[in-house]
Length: 86
Image 1: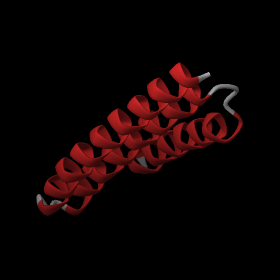
Image 2: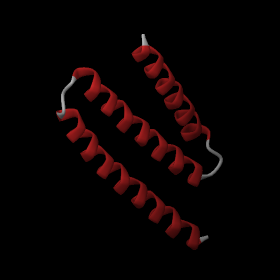
Image 3: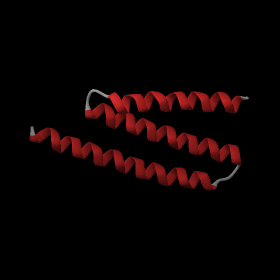
Image 4: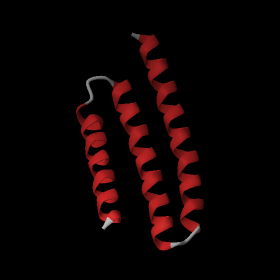
């Protein structure tokens, strides 16, 4: 029963993050919502590792976290460079 409540709340967080990603007024809002979505996905992978009692999912979560961090840095650098050209 508790798993259903946790996954429902996580799904609600994904919904809010996707909403901000799609209708965010500024590109910076979209980058922040994408980073939030990545953090939620990492949490979902960790929850699945706990649910299935398989530590391989934690390795996947670590690799995903590294890639998500790199993605956020790349987008931030892109927005920083694009803002200076205006």
